Amino acid sequence: MAMKSRDLSGLLTFQVVVREGSFSAAARQLKLTPGAISRSIGQLEQAVGVRLFNRTTVEFSLTAEGRRLASHVCDKLELLEDSFAEFNSENKAPQGLLRISLSNSYGKYYVIPRLKDFLARYPEIDLEIALNDSRQTLIEEGFDIGTSYGRPDDSAYISRVVCKPRLVLVGAPEYLEEHGVPAHPDDLAEHECIAVSIGANWSGASIFGQSGGADGEVLHKVQPKGRLLVTDQIDGVIQAAVAGLGLTVVHLRAALPYLKSGHLKALLTNYRIDAEVGTREIHVFFPHRAKIAPRVRAFVDFLAEDRDDDGIDCAEFSV
Image 1: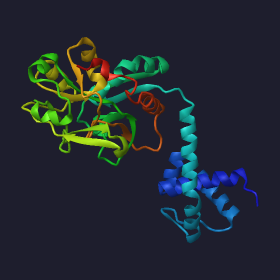
Image 2: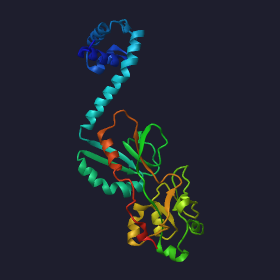
Image 3: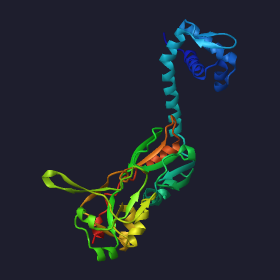
Image 4: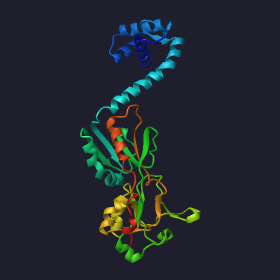
């Protein structure tokens, strides 16, 4: 027997009654009278040929047939509602205030220089940006989106990789004149290295990889040793390196202005540098909600458009 539009309306009413737990709550949700809800349920019961609720003037409960119908249709109708909501969201222009917490170095050197394009693309979005390398919570502080080095610990968030910044070893010309230029990662044991720390799980170690021909990539783990440790903001090591306090590993784009000006030199550029923990992959994360606001989706997609630094040749800035 073909389903009539009245039957579908009754199923939708049935779903809301089951979800809300009472006829009166369903009436408020659907902006109908309790009598209209009762009539709709009565028509549905007539269509399916069984009683769905045991009800009195003060309470109701699902019959066995009602529970069976709920198990068949309620989840499917929820998915249908979500699909319609998502479709409507995607067809609305993103708008409103978007509050974003960005990792410090990534925000300064990878996101903010591109924001003019985002604001031109979405004229109805206003942005509020905070820069913080250690924030891993959003909801308590009212942020819509955050970024972090590595995946956030809290499973309440959706996350995805949006950028893989390239790392580079740098030092000031004055430091290199006095202490020499390292030719191999093992040489760093003889140098003053500026370390960085963010969070309890941060090791600060770097992995230097170099092609080994038939043997594949040869890896060298370097744990920085020195008298200076910078915490909480990883790009703070740049000013320390410019001041001649030692060698350090930083995001390439953060170091680029100083490499171009000659205040820093790129070292061991024939090696691929990775971080043992944390700094290589930038994750964007946001609260796990069934309906993601169009402005959030727009900004996440915007971040993913700029993924790496592979087009920059560090060799031209080396010693």
